Length: 154
Image 1 (spheres, rainbow, N blue to C red):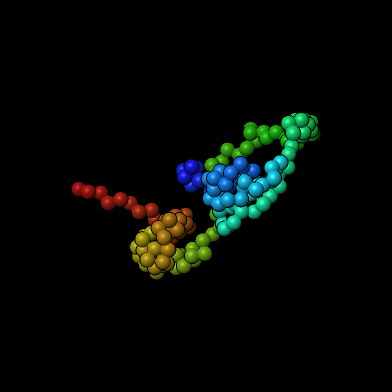
Image 2 (image 1 turned 45 degrees about the vertical axis):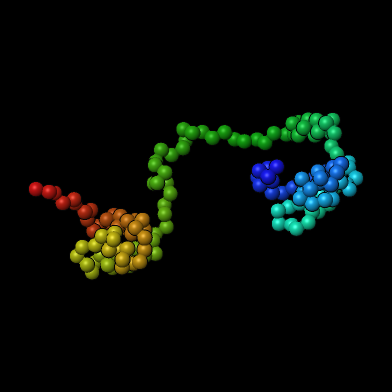
């Protein structure tokens, strides 16, 4: 029962016949004094002692009537989606990100220095690489910097 108790830290006990059974379920006595018919002890994980609750009895016939009632309720009307009308643009083109607050500072640095890179922007603006790379892309799109050409080995 230790493994079960570790995986179910909240405990509920209905009426039991002996204090041994109560101790097995709740780690304390008390469940053997319950009246039955929905009388229970509920022990949440954060509580030091159990709470006494009263559960209600619901017959199978009542459950069947409830399920029948729910099943006969008016259905929600949902208009179908026409997937032919969905835009064929890539998702990245549909979502416009707000301009970066450091873009103006990055533009100033690009104008002041002959060569800049994402790592240069990281150091000067004290930001992470993903943001610095996005700023470099914005500077390239604005025409302030050119795309770096890889060095060719001879």
